[in-house]
Image 1 (cartoon, rainbow, N blue to C red):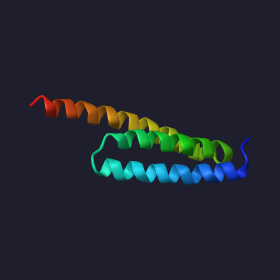
Image 2 (image 1 turned 180 degrees about the vertical axis):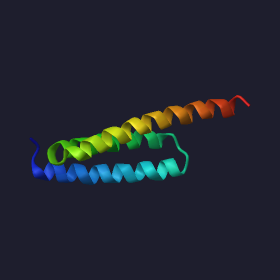
Image 3 (image 1 turned 30 degrees about the vertical axis):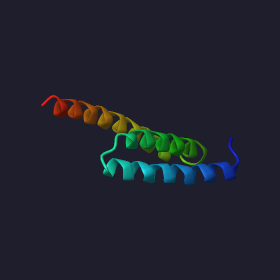
Image 4 (image 1 turned 30 degrees about the horizontal axis):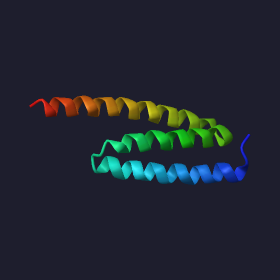
Length: 82
């Protein structure tokens, strides 16, 4: 489907984006969620070419990230209303 070099490069890009996401989320910056989801999409593409387990894992992580973002956004609204 994809050339092996493309999959390898996408794996590295996914790793770097995921590390940036973890760093931003550790600093409590909302942009980290965007990076997390982009990184997960990269890993899903890599998984399609290599391992369906990786696809399932990253779909689950993406769902958890979206739910966590919504919770964080809701909690932030409550804090701002005080």
